[in-house]
Amino acid sequence: MENRSTFTTFTLDGYFVMDQQKHFFFFIFLLLYATIVILNSLLIAVIYFERTLHNPMYIFVCNLSCNGIYGSTSLIPHLLFNLTIEEHKISLTNCFIQIYCLHTYNIIELTILALMSYDRYVAICYPLHYHYMMSTKKLQAFIFFVWSYPLVTFLIYESFTIRLNFCREIIDKTHCVNFELIKLSCTDITTHSLIGLGLMAVYMIPQVLIILFSYALILRVCIYSSKECQTKALQTCTPHLLTVLNYFVGVFFEIVQSRLNSRYLSYDFRNFMSLYFMIFPPLLNPVIYGMSGQVIKKHIRNFFFVKKVAALRN
Image 1 (cartoon, rainbow, N blue to C red):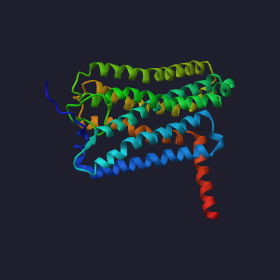
Image 2: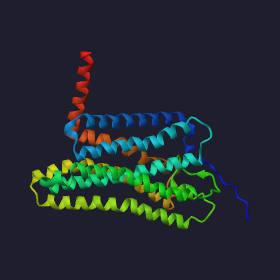
Image 3: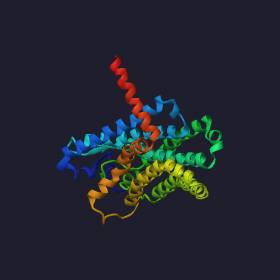
Image 4: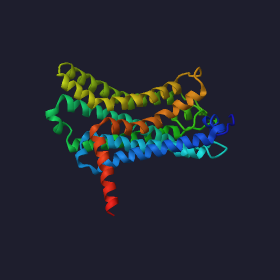
């Protein structure tokens, strides 16, 4: 029988392109992380304290912000730490934890976006039945499903990866990704890869179909509606469409470069795009919903005004 070393520590090769300017990248990632946490925390606080915002649309926005903080915290502190050390290594245990957090973040994000599209569909196509179709009990069930489904099911899938032995140690990224890790396995990964593709379809296709179906029906209703109704529907849906587009730009590139041969793209560009889906959605989502919605903007101004008045009185 052939003797083969089994690695339990891996080298993250994506950092070596940043080593020459590590102080610059450290400052950029620190600034991005602080901005993500502040913007999303502000949006969560405004929605929590303003009772008029306690409706399905803004509760979904609040969960989107919570997930944004969860996802960025799973990645950026790890980036910052690795930019302060010489050897960019990660243990197998920490790699599994990061894979679990980053992948569940993505599934949760897409599931929230799908439910938000359904919420917009109900609000525009069935306004008189909205409170029944999006009742408090149904909303609670949706939120429970959004978080429990990815956190439980991906743990089951990751248990298959945990059983593998690894004969190589170089991960061609700044962070651990499940498919990049299983490519280092000592055994044939064909079956594991097919299972991964099948689960990716299960995690993505239903949500994508919900989004497409919802907007197809919204478009059909808008075609036969008045100009005023069309304008109102556009204003209501624009933030969500921008959020969906922002998310899919990063995810699509991540899938393509992980599964297909992308060597014709520069290494720096691939390195940047592998981080896109974990940084820009959490960064831009609160901006999109905070700046595009007049209701949110008004409550943010009121939130700071009340805090300022309270501080002056004290």
